[in-house]
Amino acid sequence: MAASYILTLAFAGFLLAGMAVKFWLASRQIRHVARHRDAVPAAFAATVPLTAHQKAADYTITKTRFGLLELAFGAAVLLAWTLLGGLDGLNRALSGWLDNGMARQLALIAAFALISGAVELPLTLYQTFVIEERFGFNKMSLKLWLADLLKSTVLGAAIGLPIAALILWLMGAAGSLWWLWAWAVWMGFNLLLLVIYPTFIAPLFNKFKPLDDETLKARVTELMRRCGFAAKGLFVMDGSKRSAHANAYFTGFGAAKRVVFYDTLLSKLSPGEVDAVLAHELGHFKHKHIVKRIAGMFAISLAGFALLGWLSTQAWFYAGLGVRPNLGGPNDALALLLFLLVVPVFSFFISPLLARLSRKHEFEADAYAVQQTSGQDLSTALLKLYEDNASTLTPDPVFVKFYYSHPPASERLARMTS
Image 1 (tube, rainbow, N blue to C red):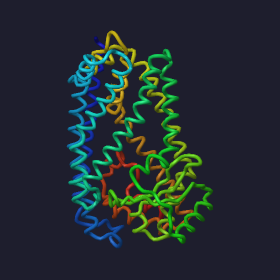
Image 2 (image 1 turned 45 degrees about the vertical axis):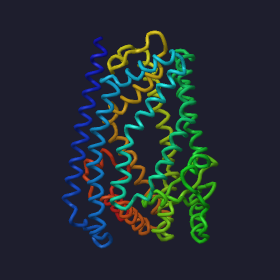
Image 3 (image 1 turned 60 degrees about the vertical axis):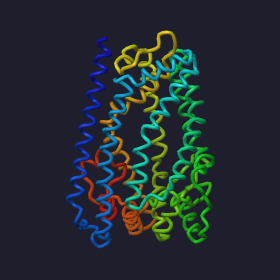
Image 4 (image 1 turned 90 degrees about the vertical axis):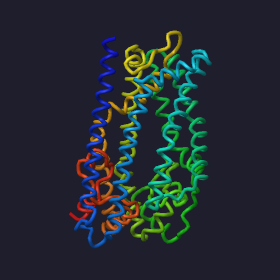
């Protein structure tokens, strides 16, 4: 009883502390961006129009304010699922329909996912069809949005339920070290996704066609050869079908690696700028950032599964989070869902460390791109992308340290010219 009470207090305390910090950070960001809205920073005054700077400021402020609403709503939903008995009530309701076997556990996971998705739909709709629409970024029709929702739901069930069933089976059949076997399955599944995603999953949502600009193709191929990178193909994705935002990325793993350009990116950048953006991505490859991140994911997930393996056997873990464990059957699905719900609450305060590591990787990739191409091309490409995506040039420094996976434009360009 004492342990469950301590967990309840710790969960509530971390949730409130996290919300307080997030609200403080968001308010800093809003004030800082608004304060600098009416003047382009001196370093960008010759290249960024005031209208573009103001649009970025307004977009940032709008998104940040909406994020406060999402934060409050998410905290209320989390409390509803846990301390207010939502997950316990759903489990009890299913007990009247199904016995304590695998079917009931999978039904609990599926019902939880469907209800959670339905609860979040209004916010998602507002973000897409109000905020993104207002700033000219949304290109999706409601029909396309609904088609994406249907496909992602079916795909999630087709992939997620078998994996969940296998992990639940391991929890019940593999003994006290089930978590080690489950971790191996989960990591194998994630590595498999890296291989099959670009070929089988991504084409369900977007069209990918080979890069047909022969001059650009020759430049890109020569750059990759010079950098020692082999890809299965160069593709252009119809990103403009859904959004006006521009990007480029590597996807796949091993022999399945491919380079993907958004069509919106190619329409805005010169060939030299495309080279520089691609060289930045190649910098991540050269510095083995992807491998390091995968290794980090392996280590963190192993610790997570080990912790879950212990917590799932502790009655206070369930009671402290508002759930009465099943007395006559397994509680594996309950343990999984509770763990996924509460881990973000306790891990929020390490996010600045992860963000800092990511920014370090971005600086390294920028430096590599400058070595391989033109620093001027990379600078102009980044400015175009910042402007195109309405990314503010004047973020709050503390907000950056907590949340930004990429350094602000001022810091990136200063490094390139130093």
